[in-house]
Length: 227
Ligand code: GRF
Image 1: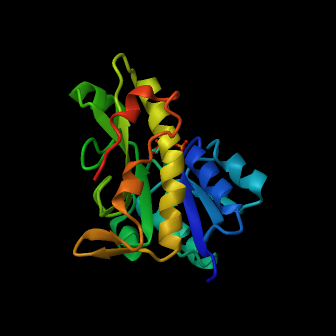
Image 2: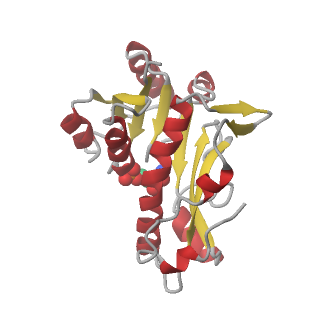
């Protein structure tokens, strides 16, 4: 089967983009990154695209409708089949989102529907929850909403601050996003009745995405979710 043609939309650092590019450099990976779009010319992630020789475009976000028109044209021109939002910090035009329904995904650093929007790690710390994590979901017009495809749990440690927690969640994001894109590319993911069904993939594997090396995260080991 041909590799799924993926575009990644970024606004900043692009570490998730970097991990998606790394995953797709394996010939056995079923998706390829064919286009990167940033709304900001200074986004650090653009360097990952250029190092990998992936076409990248800057489409300034002066207005939602104009951005959608220009981004949509580029996506069509490059025959993109899946759009991945990876640290893309703008709210997209609702008609554009609708036109990519179930073909556009986002990663968010919390266990949605908890803590949508800005500073989810700070929100989790302020709420005093013991577990947070990250979520990959299909995009709907509402911010950080839509059918959940995959989640991974990160335990909050005593004394955690926003920086430490964000870094630990990010390391898990770097595993979860390439895995989720692979599942989509292998045509294992479908939306039925507003929920996601994944073919040939068991929940315990998804839920045990915490770091494998217990020395890196001793408190996480005992907290691993069993379903
Ligand atoms: C990640 O935490 C992602 O979940 C959120 O924005 C951050 C982007 O990081 N949506 P990066 O640009 O991929 O390094």
